[in-house]
Length: 238
Image (cartoon, rainbow, N blue to C red; front, side, top):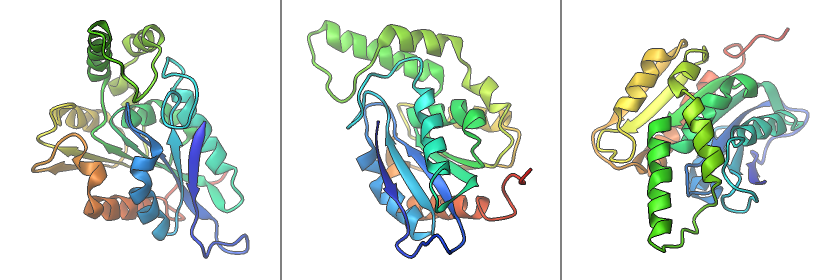
Protein backbone atom coordinates (compact mmCIF):
# COMPACT_ATOMS: atom_id res chain seq x y z
CA UNK A 1 0.00 0.00 0.00
CA UNK A 2 1.22 3.49 -0.86
CA UNK A 3 0.44 6.50 1.31
CA UNK A 4 1.67 9.98 2.23
CA UNK A 5 1.75 11.34 5.77
CA UNK A 6 1.43 15.08 6.43
CA UNK A 7 2.41 16.29 9.90
CA UNK A 8 2.56 19.94 11.11
CA UNK A 9 6.20 21.07 11.20
CA UNK A 10 5.81 22.43 14.73
CA UNK A 11 4.47 19.18 16.20
CA UNK A 12 6.69 17.50 18.80
CA UNK A 13 6.33 14.51 21.14
CA UNK A 14 6.29 16.97 24.05
CA UNK A 15 3.32 18.87 22.65
CA UNK A 16 -0.37 17.96 22.73
CA UNK A 17 -1.25 14.93 20.57
CA UNK A 18 -2.68 15.73 17.16
CA UNK A 19 -6.03 14.74 15.74
CA UNK A 20 -5.60 12.57 12.65
CA UNK A 21 -7.47 12.33 9.35
CA UNK A 22 -7.48 9.46 6.85
CA UNK A 23 -8.12 10.66 3.28
CA UNK A 24 -9.38 8.20 0.63
CA UNK A 25 -9.86 8.90 -3.08
CA UNK A 26 -12.52 7.64 -5.48
CA UNK A 27 -12.42 4.95 -8.15
CA UNK A 28 -9.74 5.57 -10.77
CA UNK A 29 -8.14 8.36 -8.76
CA UNK A 30 -5.14 8.41 -6.41
CA UNK A 31 -3.81 10.04 -3.26
CA UNK A 32 -1.89 12.78 -5.10
CA UNK A 33 -5.14 14.40 -6.21
CA UNK A 34 -5.98 15.09 -2.57
CA UNK A 35 -2.68 16.65 -1.57
CA UNK A 36 -4.09 20.19 -1.58
CA UNK A 37 -6.73 19.21 0.96
CA UNK A 38 -4.16 17.30 3.02
CA UNK A 39 -1.97 20.39 3.26
CA UNK A 40 -4.96 22.54 4.22
CA UNK A 41 -5.88 20.10 7.00
CA UNK A 42 -2.26 19.89 8.11
CA UNK A 43 -2.24 23.68 8.39
CA UNK A 44 -5.11 23.26 10.86
CA UNK A 45 -2.77 21.24 13.11
CA UNK A 46 -3.94 17.79 12.08
CA UNK A 47 -1.90 14.80 10.96
CA UNK A 48 -3.19 13.58 7.60
CA UNK A 49 -2.69 10.21 5.91
CA UNK A 50 -3.60 10.06 2.21
CA UNK A 51 -3.97 6.52 0.91
CA UNK A 52 -3.79 4.81 -2.47
CA UNK A 53 -6.39 2.05 -2.36
CA UNK A 54 -5.31 -1.32 -3.69
CA UNK A 55 -5.18 -1.27 -7.47
CA UNK A 56 -4.62 2.49 -7.54
CA UNK A 57 -1.61 4.79 -7.77
CA UNK A 58 1.43 3.27 -6.14
CA UNK A 59 -0.42 0.42 -4.39
CA UNK A 60 -0.43 -3.16 -5.63
CA UNK A 61 -3.29 -5.59 -5.98
CA UNK A 62 -6.73 -4.80 -7.34
CA UNK A 63 -10.00 -3.47 -5.97
CA UNK A 64 -12.00 -6.42 -4.69
CA UNK A 65 -14.34 -7.41 -1.89
CA UNK A 66 -11.69 -6.74 0.76
CA UNK A 67 -10.89 -3.13 -0.11
CA UNK A 68 -12.69 -1.86 3.00
CA UNK A 69 -9.79 -3.37 4.94
CA UNK A 70 -7.43 -0.82 3.35
CA UNK A 71 -9.31 2.00 5.08
CA UNK A 72 -9.35 0.18 8.41
CA UNK A 73 -5.61 -0.54 8.16
CA UNK A 74 -4.91 3.11 7.31
CA UNK A 75 -6.80 4.23 10.42
CA UNK A 76 -4.86 1.78 12.57
CA UNK A 77 -1.58 2.95 11.10
CA UNK A 78 -2.34 6.62 11.74
CA UNK A 79 -3.61 5.78 15.23
CA UNK A 80 -0.24 4.19 16.05
CA UNK A 81 1.78 7.32 15.20
CA UNK A 82 3.47 8.77 18.32
CA UNK A 83 2.28 12.32 17.56
CA UNK A 84 -1.38 11.35 17.06
CA UNK A 85 -4.21 11.03 19.58
CA UNK A 86 -5.61 7.53 18.91
CA UNK A 87 -9.08 8.58 20.08
CA UNK A 88 -9.35 11.44 17.58
CA UNK A 89 -9.14 9.91 14.11
CA UNK A 90 -11.38 11.40 11.43
CA UNK A 91 -12.08 10.49 7.82
CA UNK A 92 -12.52 12.30 4.54
CA UNK A 93 -13.49 10.32 1.44
CA UNK A 94 -14.71 11.07 -2.08
CA UNK A 95 -17.15 9.01 -4.16
CA UNK A 96 -16.06 5.36 -3.76
CA UNK A 97 -13.79 6.57 -0.96
CA UNK A 98 -16.84 7.99 0.84
CA UNK A 99 -18.62 4.67 0.40
CA UNK A 100 -15.67 2.78 1.88
CA UNK A 101 -15.51 5.22 4.80
CA UNK A 102 -19.12 4.47 5.73
CA UNK A 103 -18.52 0.73 5.47
CA UNK A 104 -15.30 0.94 7.51
CA UNK A 105 -16.46 3.48 10.08
CA UNK A 106 -17.31 1.10 12.93
CA UNK A 107 -14.16 -1.05 12.74
CA UNK A 108 -11.93 1.94 12.01
CA UNK A 109 -13.45 3.78 15.01
CA UNK A 110 -13.65 7.10 13.22
CA UNK A 111 -14.65 10.00 15.45
CA UNK A 112 -16.03 12.11 12.56
CA UNK A 113 -16.56 11.64 8.83
CA UNK A 114 -16.56 14.08 5.92
CA UNK A 115 -18.11 12.46 2.84
CA UNK A 116 -17.90 14.10 -0.59
CA UNK A 117 -20.51 12.80 -3.05
CA UNK A 118 -20.43 9.26 -1.54
CA UNK A 119 -21.35 6.60 -4.09
CA UNK A 120 -23.91 3.92 -3.10
CA UNK A 121 -23.70 0.34 -4.36
CA UNK A 122 -25.94 0.86 -7.37
CA UNK A 123 -23.66 3.58 -8.76
CA UNK A 124 -20.53 1.48 -8.21
CA UNK A 125 -22.18 -1.50 -9.91
CA UNK A 126 -23.08 0.71 -12.88
CA UNK A 127 -19.40 1.71 -13.01
CA UNK A 128 -18.36 -1.95 -13.18
CA UNK A 129 -20.82 -2.53 -16.03
CA UNK A 130 -19.40 0.46 -17.91
CA UNK A 131 -15.86 -0.77 -17.36
CA UNK A 132 -16.76 -4.22 -18.69
CA UNK A 133 -18.36 -2.65 -21.77
CA UNK A 134 -15.25 -0.62 -22.54
CA UNK A 135 -13.09 -3.70 -22.23
CA UNK A 136 -15.41 -5.64 -24.53
CA UNK A 137 -14.96 -2.88 -27.11
CA UNK A 138 -11.20 -3.30 -26.89
CA UNK A 139 -10.40 -0.22 -24.82
CA UNK A 140 -7.58 -0.48 -22.29
CA UNK A 141 -8.44 1.09 -18.95
CA UNK A 142 -5.26 1.89 -17.02
CA UNK A 143 -6.43 4.26 -14.29
CA UNK A 144 -6.99 1.39 -11.82
CA UNK A 145 -7.11 -2.39 -11.50
CA UNK A 146 -10.25 -4.23 -10.45
CA UNK A 147 -11.31 -7.79 -9.65
CA UNK A 148 -14.82 -7.41 -11.10
CA UNK A 149 -16.36 -10.67 -9.86
CA UNK A 150 -15.12 -10.28 -6.28
CA UNK A 151 -16.07 -6.61 -6.16
CA UNK A 152 -19.50 -7.22 -7.68
CA UNK A 153 -20.24 -9.96 -5.17
CA UNK A 154 -19.28 -7.68 -2.29
CA UNK A 155 -21.38 -4.78 -3.56
CA UNK A 156 -24.43 -6.97 -4.15
CA UNK A 157 -24.24 -8.20 -0.54
CA UNK A 158 -23.74 -4.72 0.92
CA UNK A 159 -26.04 -1.85 1.86
CA UNK A 160 -24.45 1.52 2.58
CA UNK A 161 -27.72 2.88 3.97
CA UNK A 162 -28.01 0.07 6.50
CA UNK A 163 -24.36 0.67 7.47
CA UNK A 164 -25.18 4.36 7.99
CA UNK A 165 -27.67 3.43 10.69
CA UNK A 166 -24.78 2.23 12.86
CA UNK A 167 -22.89 5.53 12.65
CA UNK A 168 -23.42 7.78 15.66
CA UNK A 169 -20.47 10.17 15.21
CA UNK A 170 -20.74 13.56 13.45
CA UNK A 171 -20.94 13.42 9.66
CA UNK A 172 -20.59 16.18 7.05
CA UNK A 173 -21.99 15.40 3.59
CA UNK A 174 -20.99 17.58 0.63
CA UNK A 175 -22.58 17.08 -2.79
CA UNK A 176 -23.03 19.05 -6.00
CA UNK A 177 -26.60 19.36 -7.22
CA UNK A 178 -25.42 18.91 -10.81
CA UNK A 179 -23.45 15.73 -10.10
CA UNK A 180 -24.23 13.42 -13.04
CA UNK A 181 -22.26 10.48 -11.65
CA UNK A 182 -23.74 10.19 -8.17
CA UNK A 183 -27.13 11.92 -7.72
CA UNK A 184 -27.15 14.33 -4.77
CA UNK A 185 -30.20 12.48 -3.47
CA UNK A 186 -27.80 9.70 -2.39
CA UNK A 187 -26.40 12.05 0.24
CA UNK A 188 -29.89 13.04 1.34
CA UNK A 189 -30.81 9.37 1.76
CA UNK A 190 -27.68 8.82 3.83
CA UNK A 191 -28.47 11.82 6.00
CA UNK A 192 -31.84 10.33 6.84
CA UNK A 193 -30.23 7.10 8.10
CA UNK A 194 -27.28 8.49 10.05
CA UNK A 195 -27.76 8.45 13.83
CA UNK A 196 -25.37 11.22 14.90
CA UNK A 197 -25.18 14.96 14.22
CA UNK A 198 -25.35 15.35 10.45
CA UNK A 199 -24.75 18.37 8.23
CA UNK A 200 -25.39 18.55 4.48
CA UNK A 201 -23.84 21.04 2.06
CA UNK A 202 -25.44 21.08 -1.40
CA UNK A 203 -23.45 23.00 -4.00
CA UNK A 204 -25.55 25.03 -6.45
CA UNK A 205 -23.40 23.97 -9.40
CA UNK A 206 -20.42 21.80 -10.14
CA UNK A 207 -19.82 18.25 -11.30
CA UNK A 208 -18.86 15.03 -9.52
CA UNK A 209 -15.40 16.30 -8.64
CA UNK A 210 -16.31 19.88 -7.75
CA UNK A 211 -16.22 19.45 -3.98
CA UNK A 212 -12.79 17.85 -3.91
CA UNK A 213 -11.26 20.58 -6.10
CA UNK A 214 -12.53 23.65 -4.25
CA UNK A 215 -9.96 25.46 -2.06
CA UNK A 216 -12.84 27.11 -0.16
CA UNK A 217 -14.30 23.70 0.65
CA UNK A 218 -10.86 22.41 1.62
CA UNK A 219 -10.72 25.12 4.27
CA UNK A 220 -14.31 24.65 5.36
CA UNK A 221 -14.16 20.85 5.64
CA UNK A 222 -10.75 20.81 7.33
CA UNK A 223 -12.00 23.28 9.94
CA UNK A 224 -15.16 21.21 10.41
CA UNK A 225 -13.02 18.11 11.04
CA UNK A 226 -10.75 19.99 13.42
CA UNK A 227 -13.73 21.19 15.45
CA UNK A 228 -15.31 17.72 15.63
CA UNK A 229 -11.97 16.14 16.57
CA UNK A 230 -11.22 18.65 19.33
CA UNK A 231 -10.51 17.26 22.82
CA UNK A 232 -13.68 16.59 24.76
CA UNK A 233 -15.83 16.06 21.65
CA UNK A 234 -14.57 12.60 20.72
CA UNK A 235 -15.08 9.22 22.38
CA UNK A 236 -14.28 9.16 26.08
CA UNK A 237 -11.32 7.15 27.27
CA UNK A 238 -12.25 3.93 29.02
